[in-house]
Image (tube, rainbow over all chains, first blue to last red; front, side):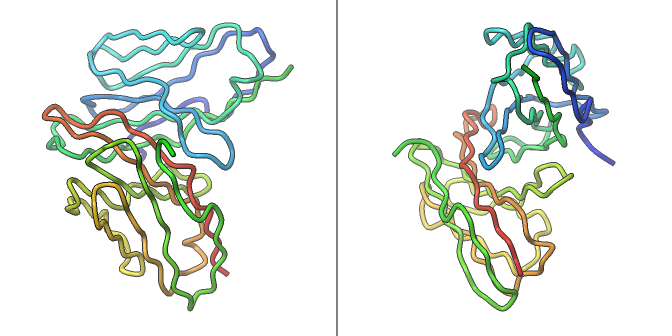
Length: 115
Length: 115
């Protein structure tokens, strides 16, 4: 059983369209992060959300943390070809003890933006 | 040099070989991690080091042996690996504070192929 379920697994849309990808769990997370990974490279941190209901914006990207801290979404407005990549959500399970926290990852959403 | 640097970027090794992966972070972080990324699977946490002390070993086979001589360097020693160990091995670092870890930064990874 996957602790963090991401959907959709694959998404291909035209440049200029809007899209939303989701990250869901039955567990509560003390924090949740979104990463973007390009082929042959490591994941690059986009945002960290820590408060239930929190919304953060990064240019055309909007991230939301669910009120119960069990889910999150990433919305991209007017997608560009440069947004193509693997989007990963990862989190620290609440009550996991603090200190150095290993992250639990979802499988990711492969996003392709067609010109 | 900035960020997290991993060497080598690519490694092909036979099942009877012994090799080591190296990771160096230039961020002043106090925690370092090894993750394994295989096709169609989420990133899997392997080892966690907090202030040079190993705090987590996620049931990793003994053919993988980590070493953390100081808070800036992390090694993964490999011996008698199996073909199913072929994957992208990612190193990460973070800063541990009382409320948890932040500033997670990944290296570009070592693409390992076991033949």
